[in-house]
Image (cartoon, rainbow, N blue to C red; front, side, top):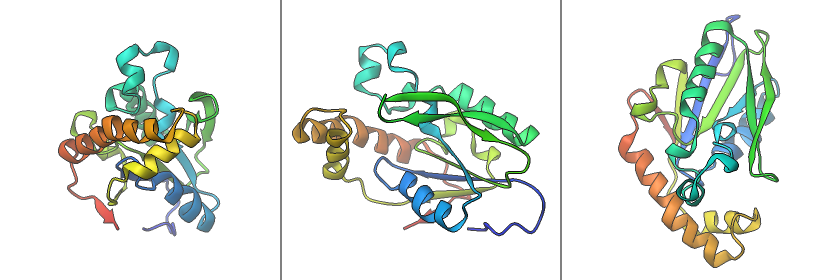
Length: 188
């Protein structure tokens, strides 16, 4: 990754991967530890609020259709054009976005956007990123299921694993089949 900026311009870096690939961990514990001035915009802040999802949307929460991708694209386009923006974050304790939690100014030179669907062909976001990375890690239903249980999404480990298989694995397959990986660097 080219994080040492010589020019006085912003760069926007995309970090994507399937569920459980370590996107958030990589951003918080690798990039931000080495470069504390980096700003991170999580795609999770663009989850559609639970109150606005129907039963299928709640069951499949995390699928591409449960994100407000049009607003996400509009906000990223504004960032690209103006160098500024106000972005939502995702608060796991309430399981919903928190509006205006992240502020980007022209003084912020390195912005990392992390999320599942950054390279989906139908979302058409790739042109907004200067650098594009995909964390290439095997899908792990056990680990994701445990996360669902620990975070209170499911009330047992078994249900967490079932959700991982019925929802997250489907999302992983969708990402791999419907993304444009040309000019994307894979991280193993």
